[in-house]
Length: 230
Image (cartoon, rainbow, N blue to C red; front, side, top):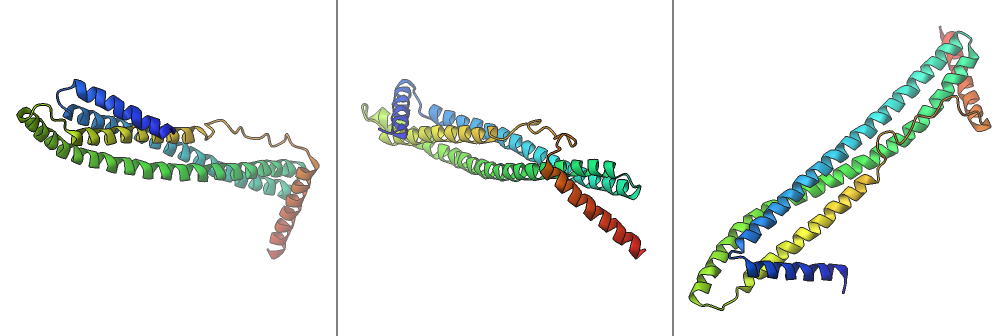
């Protein structure tokens, strides 16, 4: 028997046991609605947390872009005054910030997509809760009618109420599993501080130096062309 099959059987067994002990199945209907309300509240917290993470990644991405622009501007000023060593240093910083820009942009896009998916799921849960509230009124009326019939004919079992309650119980179990999956997805994203800014001057490998030389030459040519135009 599969896991879902066992869950369904346990749900039915628990429901039957409880219904046998209480006087009014409406108590269980109200409890299921309260359970669903709690799940919606928990989902709202998850969505809010994911939206905060999305904003953090966006802020880090925008900060890296701004830092790269400022580093290039400092390199340009160093070239103007003839300080080539300082220009190289600032261009190394720009390369480091360019790498951060790519990293944070990817994380921002992932976080944004996850937040949107969670918002869609939250709206679905709210719709299900609204439907449960409406159906609770109908089932409560049926339960009262069944109770009146039982008073007239002792020993008659109302299978309709039992079946409706079992479906609601299984739905509650399924929604909890969905919430756990959503929280597990949120936990996959790195928290604040997971990416420490790289030390701009730390790297001296030949490939990076070649990139710095290439950008330095391009900067000189651009500034030289600007002077000739004046």
